[in-house]
Length: 316
Image 1 (cartoon, rainbow, N blue to C red):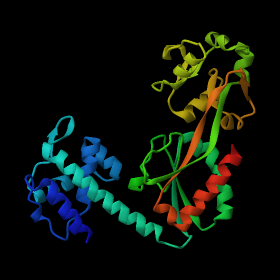
Image 2 (cartoon, rainbow, N blue to C red; image 1 turned 180 degrees about the horizontal axis):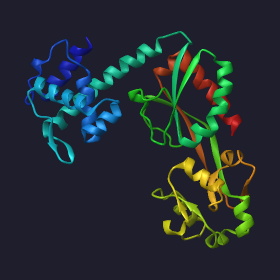
Image 3 (cartoon, rainbow, N blue to C red; image 1 turned 60 degrees about the vertical axis):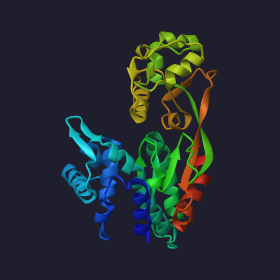
């Protein structure tokens, strides 16, 4: 039934361009996934990384789909995959097909009443490395049958494509099919290692920061804009050390490289990292707990969701 619906969808939108009648009931769904990955990533290598496959496999899938449809989907160039106009038209229908398959998988997942099984959680690096492990240790005692897969990533994982069951994000997702709950706020401050302060002295007012070694971001402009808001005009060259990896950034503060801006919960893990300039109030960052509406009907995922919703505010 699902294949029939997809056939009608593609027939209606691409009758002029493709001979869809060549497809039969044994159609391999992986061909569509490889096509979309190639389209989104722009190369066989990028598509292979996303799908955790090999470049030859992705290339073979795309060639097979082209043969079945009787069209050319990509121009192979030295810079990667260049989609043809037909590929761009086919993409809408292919995404609908992929969405239907993912929706079917979500419903199957949500219909399983058993608590035993795996829940995949994604969170930013500092949250995954420092905030979540103690919480997950508590959850292990409360939900011993649940296995956890933790994805440490600053990228916004797509819950719609089942890259994760539950996401903890600092940016509020906007998809209507997602349930989003603001569970806590991360407060931030200005910190430095006691060895650095012993060596360079402690700043007494925000303007003193301009005479100190600062730890900033490389490409991310959040800190530069934040300091400008305090009347401190700086550029990326004003920072003695620059890094966009949040865990490496925290380790640089701990190593005494300079004064940095980190979350209070992170600073609390090292007694030798001290707060400076308490009058500098950095706006807090909200944490959004996100889950797909259909997946949330799973007893297992709902139990993990509820546990995190209660434990995160206490931990912060």
